[in-house]
Structure formats: C-alpha cells, structure tokens
Length: 110
Image 1 (cartoon, rainbow, N blue to C red):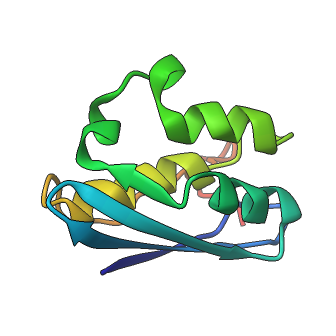
Image 2: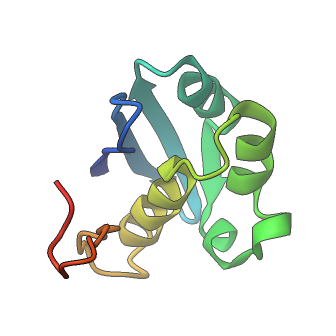
C-alpha cells in the first residue's frame, strides 16, 4: 500500500490518500479529508487502473471526477492521487513534491 498526506495550503484541510494494489493492474483508492469535496472525489474514484497514470489531463478519470467534485481548480489532491498511484504501480519512486512560494527577497514565504 502507498499512503500520502497532501497538505493543500490555505484551506487547512489535508487529505490522506491510500492506494492499494488489488490485482494485476487494478488499485483500490481510499481518501480521507475534512473537505467534503475531496471526500466526494474519493467516492467517485474507488478504483483506478495502472493505465490511468498515462492518460492525458482531459481524459484522466481523476481529473474528470475532480472537475465535477472540486470547486477549487488549484487543489493539489488530484495530482497527489496520481503520484501515489504511480508509486504503488511501481512506475515511480516515492519522492516528495512541493510548491514553494518565494518572496521578493528570494526567501521562501512562511
């Protein structure tokens, strides 16, 4: 099983995503969050396949369902779901990702 915690920023409602290989190329998706929109996304994609990581944004089931469930288009949860799927499928390494805001003085914003 691959588990990630996604801290989305200002909303303060992190999401915990678990991806578990069921068989061959099928994976179970479990998402927990205080955000009702993210919770709904989790119910809309209870299962993904390995091939989903290769689908383009407009064809990807995670982004399609995300577009229907999430009001905030910059929410990082869909990307985090796909990153976790890549790792669980053995297609990528478990490395953290981040978005860092930089102030005019060149230092990271708090």
